[in-house]
Length: 67
Image (cartoon, rainbow, N blue to C red; front, side, top):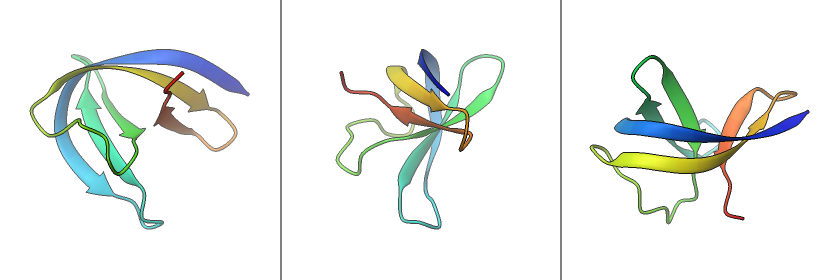
């Protein structure tokens, strides 16, 4: 299943997965959420973000949605 959602919060860390995909650790005030973004994404550590996302429940990951 796929759900569209929005992640609002502060980027507290930036990582690269084992598969080479860049992701941000975003703290929304209650939870820490990993959001996969494009390599050329303008978001960085310390930014307050409001990211449109797609939540893939089969694979249990969240990715930025540019649509």
